[in-house]
Image 1 (cartoon, helix red, strand yellow):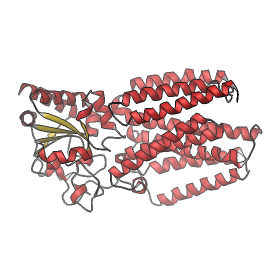
Image 2 (cartoon, rainbow, N blue to C red; image 1 turned 120 degrees about the vertical axis):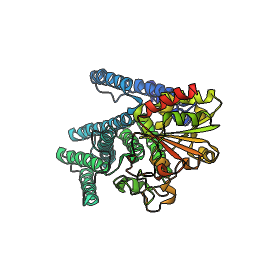
Image 3 (cartoon, rainbow, N blue to C red; image 1 turned 45 degrees about the vertical axis):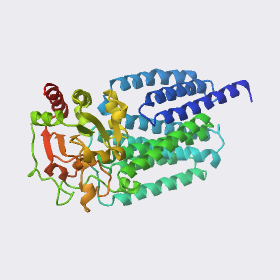
Image 4 (cartoon, helix red, strand yellow; image 1 turned 90 degrees about the vertical axis):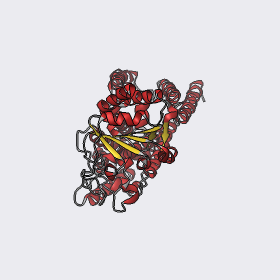
Length: 465
């Protein structure tokens, strides 16, 4: 082994250690920033080391890619709003899958030109990386379009959809088999990539926006697997390690998210959740007839003279960009001696940890963010549960309406608080398309309007109470 190879191996080892430490620190909000910095430094080492690897063919191409890509990534990251972070994550995740597929396509061209032997050991990682990378790329673009509201967030279904998907999958397997058995033509490989892209689109279309946290996590794991397999195609240790870490963590997170909704992954992928019509929650669904509306003054007085308030953030807070106003309200309540906590449901928002990210941006203390299992027993001893646009994760139909699509899903027990205040724009159902009988509960009052405006008024009223 040459000196260069020893240095590269050591660099990749350091990179792997930093990636693992980064993931470890990301498990806690208190150390997440440190974890990001460690992982970023590890990636910097990996990129620098790779530039001196023997696999590099052209410095000119590297510089062109860096000059074009770096400003796009930097500007995009700086300009994106925190409320748009889910779609940014989906887009960047798709870029990773697409990159893996493109690199594998380049390796296939090497096989065609005779630079690489045409053995199944060489072709298998190329084929697998292309398939998985294309599925991740196309699926992530559809997830981005749904989150960005470039298309409907509701499930898109049609008669015979499962049959069509099955036929596309069979076509992919057939084309992959032909390529692996030596039928090395650009048309077959192109057909394999096109069919994989199609499956990515068709696979995400029937998934509703309420399931986007699980979908994003699953596609993230796909991208990791594609990158790891590409590492085998390129004999790149760092790609194998980093891709495996992403794939494993994404898979684990996907399982945890599905468990948080008490639904199987197959139900998330094929259940078309969210295609139900409003009112499907059962006979207790909110019709609006028994809803009590409150004024800002009434709610502010109730909050100001409470002993304990639990704030339940949801996608409504994200859309209204109300996180800073929420922080101000919490501070004003604490000045009056009110105990304040935040209840975080695992699938609140549009990506894993969405609410944590928004509240962290608003400098809400980490120790006030309580996970569902920790906070649920506290609702019975809480004066006011303040729900900000969190429709589906507070829906009691999940406990007591067996024919509800969300029946059995663990929810935040806000209805057990002494008083429940719900901030919403209107009585329209949440992203899952399911009405919430909580709104007709006698202890519930609705404060209608833009969440940011309403919370800002509440903060001012509490301060002057």
